[in-house]
Image 1 (cartoon, one colour):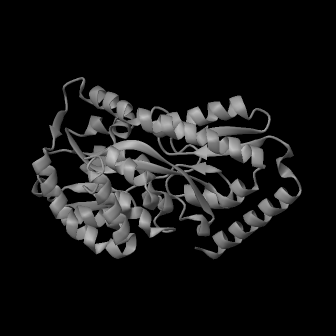
Image 2: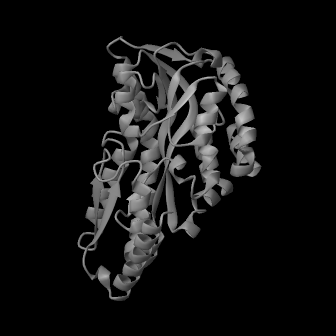
Image 3: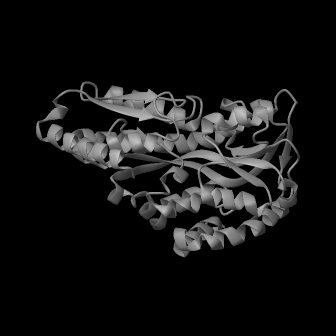
Length: 334
């Protein structure tokens, strides 16, 4: 953390404290919700639903302003903005929180979860809820997990087995763990912001990537990739978070109603996410120009075996207890 950032953060916290003690919330509270996805994605739909319900139930007390598509802050700036109070709500991928809590990397372990239902069972388990609330010492409060769908590979060559990925340049998020998993495939990881993926694929800086179907479609990645691989190799989820000083300083009635609204929106986002992803998958394939490859259970197991050594490598940072809880969630419905 830089000296300038520490000074700004201290000033922001002092200002928040003074404003709260002076009754700063006598006027309508503005809650800025910034995110990097489009309005058509599960996260985008959730943000708009939250905005609508707050307008209906907290009119005159609070309002939500939504800034999609990195229009306010991009990948690299949104966490700093939250801690400084420049935004009040974010729904980042867990990878963006690993510097504050390394255990959130559990969601980046490829082929750990069998499917979205298993990941949601883990999120609602005691271990999953403990993880959600483990950021408070860093001034961050976790409010909910939002599902975005399972992540799928896209590439400019067919991918059936791990050996097929050898030599490809994969976009990864700013995560050493993600990079290690791609390296385990003898492929080349390239760290890149979400908003830069399309151009990267178009220019050949990268030639493979991964995202849920909703992101692939809304960001038009399929236009510059020939093969869509239904790998379901990792859960695409978000952690809805807020600034702790802001949240704890809200009037009790506003905070209570806002949490009730967030819980309702979370149920709806998670309910709709898989259907929306299936719809976007069909739109990607509608013109017949892309080839869909669906990994079999046997093929997925081959990928899982390649990833297991990376799971072991990161076990001390993530915690064997979380990895065991995730594996238990796979079999919980059986």
